[in-house]
Image 1 (cartoon, protein in one colour):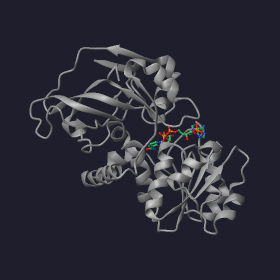
Image 2 (image 1 turned 45 degrees about the vertical axis):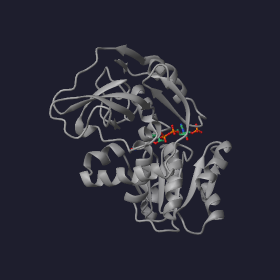
Image 3 (image 1 turned 90 degrees about the vertical axis):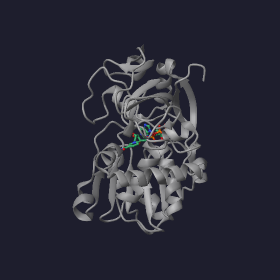
Image 4 (image 1 turned 180 degrees about the vertical axis):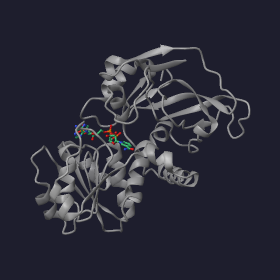
Length: 330
Ligand SMILES: NC(=O)c1ccc[n+]([C@@H]2O[C@H](COP(=O)([O-])OP(=O)(O)OC[C@H]3O[C@@H](n4cnc5c(N)ncnc54)[C@H](OP(=O)(O)O)[C@@H]3O)[C@@H](O)[C@H]2O)c1
């Protein structure tokens, strides 16, 4: 089997390497999965760089939290899965063409779903859906504002918000994505090259301030959103793309009671009931089937070219995700 590992933190393209090892055998209650598709997300790159900010990583480590694969061996006592079943392995360390996971960490992939789209289903669409449904009571006609709106999460927010009857204000840093976001259903797209007066821009498009702001950037971007949400509105920080700690204006906190909170899908999974998880997966599978969930793919690399893949994933201005494939000939 082949597996990507990093022994020290640093520039992902420099520190990531590929190792070969004997195929692992599934123990009791475990299944072995041949990953055909593995996703690359910003969180993977930040983890390799040592900037993710979650629990310290024990080195050497293997990145990867999204994959689609086929079960090719089952351990003793496995009841619900058989050889040939398509699954979406859960947990870290998935940048490997072969993984062994407990049966309960290998939920079935939605039947008939495209493997790449299914592998990407949980992390970004799941986060977008939960942020719109779990954080603030929203009603049709309410406004939501977000930055990094052309990210995969951002585009899902736009599509789900439109289905829910919500209106979206979407901040991006380049003009060439405006039409794409309008086609997704964005009501307003603001191209901010660093000098935009967000308050003035918003007052031109709506009388009612957003109740919810979604921040993927941190630093000054958090303060900008906190400055335009409604009194007692919520700013949910869910990404650290700038690498800077969030700043928030004290006036917004004191005089307008703006609430700043975080959102982390891993924490949601750690604390959600089995029923909530099944409900979320059922919603996502439906949205995958009806085409609402569709993430663009800019390039595919076999796992053996993982260095090129991570270098490509780290480039600004991509038009879609970078995917790793388990098959060298794919
Ligand atoms: N908290 C959670 O549970 C959770 C779950 C999923 C994702 N996330 C986070 O969500 C964010 C988006 O992830 P994704 O997979 O959807 O991203 P993606 O599709 O790979 O797109 C990356 C986006 O980030 C923008 N960007 C990159 N660096 C930036 C910077 N310094 N300032 C402003 N914009 C920047 C890019 O803009 P250009 O196109 O202009 O380059 C692009 O819109 C990431 O921070 C990720 O870690 C968090």
